Length: 341
Image (cartoon, rainbow, N blue to C red; front, top):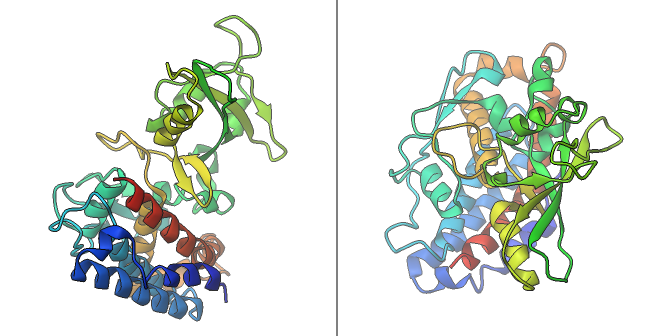
């Protein structure tokens, strides 16, 4: 059992004195408190379940936690914090698992996915469909467990960003990003880098360290031991000597994830100005898996058969990891929405 008792204890400790946005209204307070209670109970059920049924309590547990997050959102008005319906749809459930299609419906509807995405500044993509494989790769934990091994070379996964911001005044902010795939770092031509980073809307305006002083010098990649590499990206900013302002600039470009900062892919959907929020990436993936579990038992049994399916162990590992990761992410997201105001 991988139930994260410590993280849930910290969440339980907030219920006696909820965040300020949830305290001023009885309905918001109860939604926050009971949403977390329901989420914890559903995660306990998920921890005791096998992959045959685990996606169901995991998704619905996250959905109830989402209601608590919405109730705690400082920018949500009295009419906005209530989440109704899923607001997300899955198609092609009988086809290959990587090809399951996810859509979100219109951004202006009150469905849970769209509304929570609005609070988190995360893109929705309406009736455009996105393959499950692309959403899967938006989860940092999925790096080691691709959903489909046949196109591993085409993956685009989140980039961890380590800030390099000295206290002295500088007109440039810098961050080391990793992992860049071998197909990018193996080429001295910066074109593969440009194409790869083009899938990360938040890096817009970047420069990068080069191996020489000329504008045509090669990117200064640093190889890592696993065949990937890292590179220092730069952005210009007239922020003077204010260290905190430079940190905040990078914080507006990256997203928090379990104590680190990451650039998340934008899925290539129309109008996506930011990368997908990690909570919404988990939401979309678990929704798709829960729909397969509930409505396509023959296909789901085939997908989780370790003797015949190359997706079976990646599914097992992602579901196991979710039990530990998601309570921490829920805590982090509550802090984010409370402080946004």
